[in-house]
Image 1 (cartoon, rainbow, N blue to C red):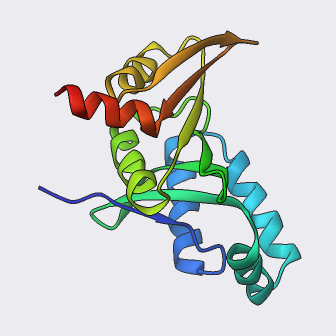
Image 2: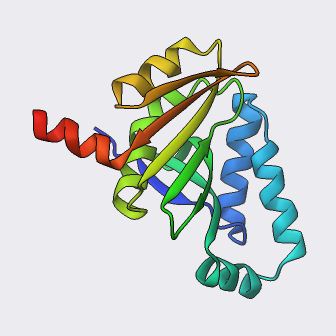
Length: 163
């Protein structure tokens, strides 16, 4: 059985950039988040980028899921380090989300010590919505054609105590 590895994309690593470009081209999903990262790379030196990541309170990264040396999916992570509140945005029409969401959540739980995680899905995306409910997310309802899901750390601990 192969192991899925989750890591933040290094926009200054040409090998990683080539891998994500290949994934986007082969999967046909939109590349909005990737294009935002490329724009940032073109406007900041690597030293400036690393300094902002280290010193800043806000976090914005692409989390990549890799398996068998190939990218299996990605999401855009936004958040505030001090509040430990994060939002995960997946590309529209991402058929890979269901297979990578557990790996992404394991990463966020172990590496970011979250308090709250929000995920926004297209309201018609019942498959991924069910997967999020199975992972302990709560649906906050529909708004403008999207359903917002929330997972709180306290709620997760309460579920573990009941088991």
